[in-house]
Amino acid sequence: MIPRTDATLPSPDAALAIPAVAGDAPRAPAFLADVSELTKPRITRLVTITSAVGFAMGAMTIGRVSSDLLWVAIVTMLGTALCSSGASALNEWIERDRDGRMRRTADRPIPAGRLRPRHGLLIGAALSAVGVLALWSLVNWASAAVALATIVSYVWVYTPLKPYTTLATVVGAAPGALPPLIGWTAAFGTVARSADAPLPWHGLDHPGGWAIFFLMFVWQIPHFLAIAWRHREDYARGGHRVLPVIDPSGARTVQATLIWTGAMIPASLGVVWAMPQLLGWAYTATAILLGAWFFRAAWRFAATRADADARRLFIVSVIYLPLVMGAMVVDAALIP
Image (cartoon, rainbow, N blue to C red; front, side, top):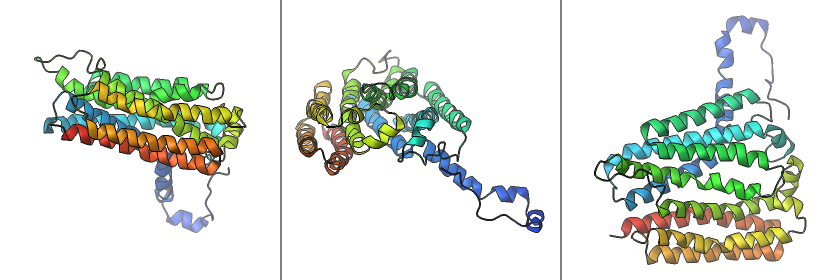
């Protein structure tokens, strides 16, 4: 890719008439847009929402839904967003060469030459550090520890594994599933600071948070396989060893898709087992119906192995997650 350049050059007279600072002004919005793109705002939005779900479920589990939690919730979501943005920037810094070989990622700020690699490193490190420190100092140690584990496992474990093993997809599902635990531990931490109800592990020893983690973990596998199948040639150009790249016939890909999608119903019902006092028939029925819809889309993709059906499976997965998590929060809030 050729870096952006100005279409025309100013005349010498114009250069004398216009201060140097003014010449830099038009580039500032473009720079900020590139920084925003570097942080993958759509992923950050998803991460923050799932953290909010964890916070809400944690607060309702301990029976502390009140206005005094608002400040903790705001700081938790801000810290989570900063950590996610930083991890995404560091991921793009590490993968800049592979991104440059892939059509769908070649126009990202670093491979396209709009941001220097060291800028990506500095921005990612700064955002990650500020996010973790905000959670540590303003929320609690547990939420900060989970956030740090998310960053380390995503940037320094999952990302380097991608060119070497298809298991990277499963490994990468772990950091993607941890954000609800950030919110969960943040909510529990409000009680942990209370002398009459000490909770030294800040909710990490409660099965509810881990049940939401497992739901997110399982969901990510078929979601990603649908993406990877449609872009398998691009992933091959980038040197990523994802399952559809080494499985030209698609037999192993559809088998894995069916297994993981089939696991969505028990995974989604696991939260009922973990939090029976909050979830009842409304969520249970919704989770079963949504899981059946998800599996039907996977079955159709398995039958045809067509890109169009892989895209349909991807769309269903994107719709499924907010619906099942929304049903979880609503049912928990409505049960007396």
